[in-house]
Length: 88
Image (cartoon, rainbow, N blue to C red; front, side):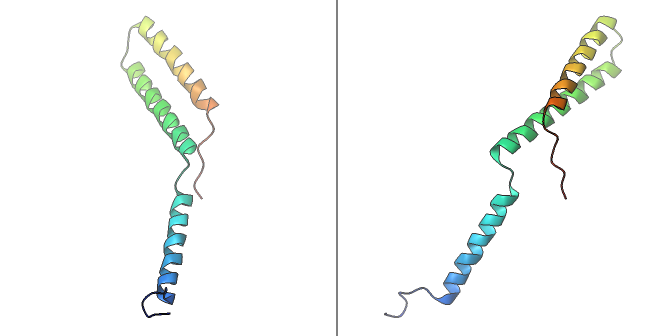
């Protein structure tokens, strides 16, 4: 074989290293479904925090009842989601 046409040992090693790094990155990244679940959970948590803030500043009894109802519904929805994965 003519010089320069074949793959050298260095090229093969670099390709293997690149493939290994790509596999590690894809394994560390959450799946699309997992990312959607985390996004949904975060959205509910932010909504709940907003309602709790509104409750702290609301004196109108009708408005407070409506906020309490919304808070209970958000807590139910949040509890129905899978718990977030713990990092080890």
